[in-house]
Image 1: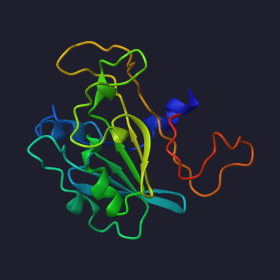
Image 2 (image 1 turned 90 degrees about the vertical axis):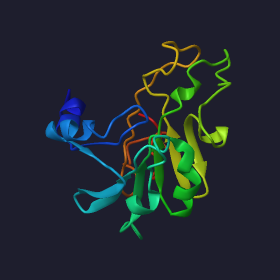
Image 3 (image 1 turned 90 degrees about the horizontal axis):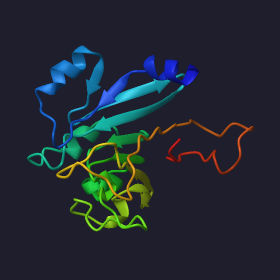
Length: 187
């Protein structure tokens, strides 16, 4: 219950996906959800801060403007929200620290070993689902909870991921496996 209370008392940010409409933005913002449309917002907790950047969906008219979203983030720790993992290379070269994406549904229909024959992305499979790294940037592509085209999943369970970010060194009372600074392990 304590964790839920913390989440409710925290500001909520969102980005648009390929099935979302710009007309949703005023409705979302009226209920307290800040929608990042090719922009960045500083997040401060005590003496620590990060820049939270969000881009419009890459698949919807190719409106994801990474350069615009990252303007003013130079020298800062940057967490990028992007509906799709397609722009991971550009983000890494722009010195984004953490890239969080979705869009692929993890393949949705997978073989029994979890291999996804189709990921619905125009980039390498290595960023199609789960945790990954490119250059110095860490990333995570969530399978999410939805479906596309066919309302079914096979060998690809839905997921809701909570990423817990910690500043500085890990607490002394946690094991090395669960306390890695600058890590994006799902909780």
